[in-house]
Amino acid sequence: MGSESGLKFASLRSSVSAEEWEARVNLAACFRLADHYGMSDMIYTHITARAPDNPEHFLLNLHGLLFDEMTASSFMRVDLGGNILSKPAVDHGYGLHTAAFVIHSAIYAARPDVMAVMHTHTIAGMAVSSLKCGLLPLTQTSHRFYPRVAYHDFTGPERDPAERAKLAQHLGRENVMVLRNHGLLTVGPSIAETFNRMYGLERSCQAQLAAMACNTPLNTLPEAVVEKSTAMYAPGAVRPYGLLEWPALLRLLDRKDPSYRE
Image 1 (cartoon, helix red, strand yellow):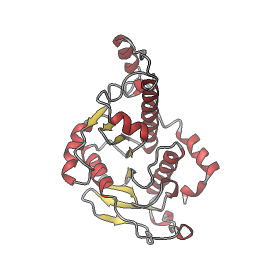
Image 2 (cartoon, one colour):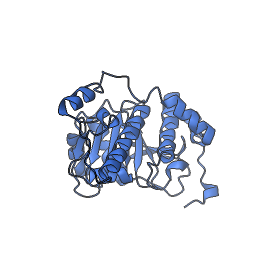
Image 3 (tube, helix red, strand yellow):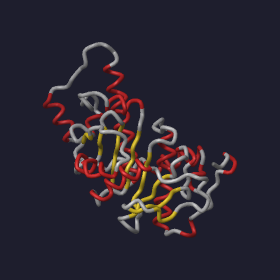
Image 4 (tube, helix red, strand yellow):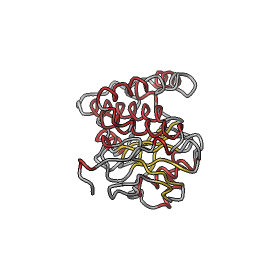
């Protein structure tokens, strides 16, 4: 493994298309933002982006980098069969993340509308995934997702390619999924929207757990109110969350550490 001082990746900017470079920059930014907002888990979770020039390919993080080490040039490109098509010339000994390949390839194969996939193991996400009730419509933020939340039952770590059919089936046409006893997953037509969904879903889980931990009756909302509120967040009823916010989030990263763009 390379030392911290030796963890450098030669820039790929001149060897990929402008569209792929933009996807790489946004993907690196998504990793950095996940870390900034406390949604990373050392090297154990993953975010990917479909290659803009080939729907059968996607960009995947090397298994061994921390989220705050990701840069635009640090990703490998793989196909839906698990073949590594390209990777950094110096990869510091890091390779393909098997669980990442299984989960993300399943979704890209089944959902041509999906351009990015994000999976997390946060404390709040794992806790809600372990509750039989799942995500509850307790807060306005949760109404963005409830009842449009898919659930996938845990049968062991997702390293078995045979699990892909069930993952795709359980996600269906939804854009957020609770992997029971495991964590959270979001998808979207852009990296920005996928990150924003995860950010909102994570905060919904945090708020639910905080309320449930207070050992006092919950102020559950009438069904009619929940139906009215969740309908106001239905696809097409509001702007696509994430697109407006993304430039400001990139400015935040640029002030903090612009190396993700390298």
